[in-house]
Image (cartoon, rainbow, N blue to C red; front, side):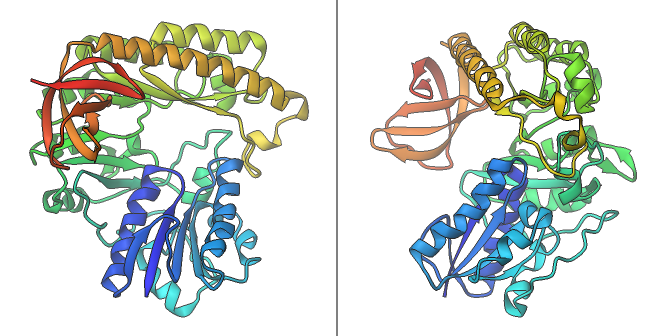
Length: 416
């Protein structure tokens, strides 16, 4: 029996999909990922935007073109948000939301179609993920307490809860991958015994002598003490993904974000001083409710002051049930305005990427080889530049290179 897992959305979903693959393999399935021929498909859905939720539905249609008799299990955020949209499909013979991914085989066997409750006060461990040869995601936390006005995630993932430190360290120590990525829904809120403890976690992870990255962070977790700790870590990869969303205080306030743009800029200045070649990336939402021309221009000017290495840009997508969805209709922007602003920031993003690549010419970095394609070995530098190295090297090998010039979607690297 063949089974394939299809993943939409975030790094946490990717981690959980790898766990689902391991559960299927243990049960005796021949496993694969993506839209490949199979008898059973598990779709790990996403609901962060309307587009993501629509894609989660569309995947079912694509599956049935491959195998009209496929048995489909759907799990994840889109199911948690609206299970009825998937039950309409006769090939969906089991589903679960975000709770239940840890026992996916039970849901398949029982053809379950009732969502289990999310446990808000306790982290639920999942079976360990399938091993990779390159980069392994390690989930440290789930849920979120922030309730940004535009965001559906606290409603579909539940409240913030942290994984036991010893369990995290044990998983890392047993993984064969040369690089790990610590990830969570709001990993800035990682706690031990009810107290914020991301600093303690990275100190302990560094002792395991495995290259590691941090996924998305809130800027206010990166105080002087935290930055000093990261600087002292021997194995930390200097890539900071700081979720900004808007660079205008008035917009941030309507979003219920927990910082000002002045605080954010101050944090990025400290990062650049301590890590001169660090990659600093971000997420930006354009066209949020009430965003005036002046507010958008303020965002543009502040983005230029920061000078990110790259940005993920999204037009605002209203999610039913959030605070923003209940705001006065007069605050809601036309799609054409959102599209125009998105295009402006895409142009600015291309400029940022070019400047960052040029800054890294003739600098030395370590690249983890993830793919060998024709005459190139490809992978990311420690500061997250996709690098093309001439010649064939072993996947999973870490190679020291000098970056020589921008090339395609990254840079060329010459072996030192």
